[in-house]
Image 1 (tube, rainbow, N blue to C red):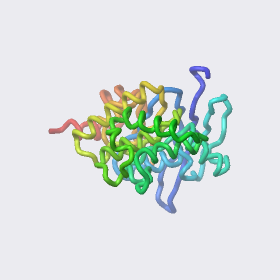
Image 2 (image 1 turned 180 degrees about the vertical axis):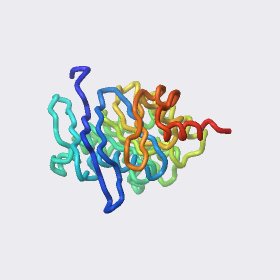
Image 3 (image 1 turned 90 degrees about the vertical axis):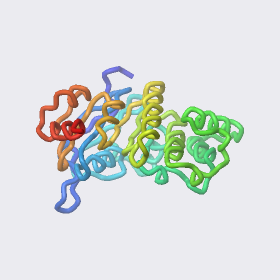
Length: 259
């Protein structure tokens, strides 16, 4: 793939909920190996945008074009549901804020990771288990708990398991919705270090929704700031956070810096 070829191209994406605006006229390109952060306060439209980008929510207007491994471009919202599900099992992954939304709680830790491998054709039990154990180790989950169910894990361990389940098939694009939300500070810090390492090692592209500017600074190359459904500012992450141009971005940054 050419280094300049877009992985995801978004044009004029708009979504309403009745009279309420979810997101309006959002356009941007995502390139291979790039991480884009979407920030804003609660209700700004960032999760609506993420769900539209991932094909989980149909927009009222606009297009999302994805370029696959062969270089072919496809309209995310025009493809069949079965094609979209296959894409989500192979090229794409989605990390939920609440790991319970992304895990099978009645299935063992190893089974959760192995299920995604089976979804792309893996059938040899020994190989599946070996890869599951390898990914538990990579995400710093105790491999001795491979046969334990996720509901016996802490919230931080559940999130690590969800990440292992998502990344085991080597996706190219990962959508993350507040991946460190609800975790205490020390757990957040370790999880962020893990995510940053895995994104770099695997050359992943990612779109990360967060209200935490520190998370955005640590993980993203570019930043989009949303307010009331609109992108009010975007640019290189350090540039946006160190020299915000829009009054709303200035307010967000100053509120974080205040003691």
